[in-house]
Length: 203
Image (cartoon, rainbow, N blue to C red; front, top):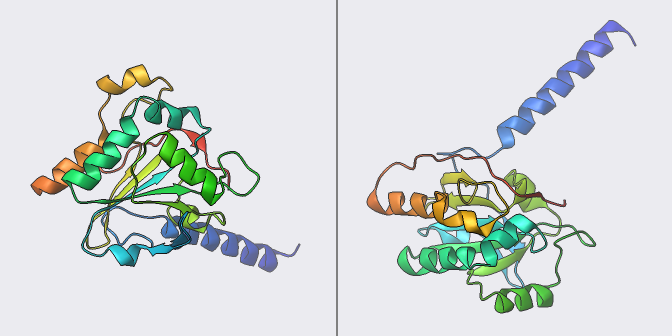
């Protein structure tokens, strides 16, 4: 391969890498919009919720780290608190591709929501993975908080202990709840980015 062509290809790869980095969501910047269908066949876009805090929760019911928070009711409690005490919209997102771990039909997702007494505003079925990739969602659970102006305020783990054991929850910092309380008080969120932990999303 001649030198000029090698240089061009190298530059193209570098630009592609830079574009990929630039496309990742950033705290303090507008969150990526989306338009994704829910289990009832209705479409939801971030722009539909202008003026409301939006929480995004990526999930995979077969992931032990998700089970950690659902089995004792921690995730359900946070969903209810966010909606009832902070008037927030809570969107649970399934980005597992068809025929992969965590993928559910609308009927299966509704049954799961009912059986574990979950309380999201809606469950979004992101089969294409476009929404998940736009947010650079990597694991389940991966959490994001967007304010009423559409600005990304928090992204990362649900709490501070990356274990599989629900017994560790009481001693962990619940990052999502702390962030919501800080927002309600008009304070800065600290930390506003944390390391998410869980099972890799099956795009």
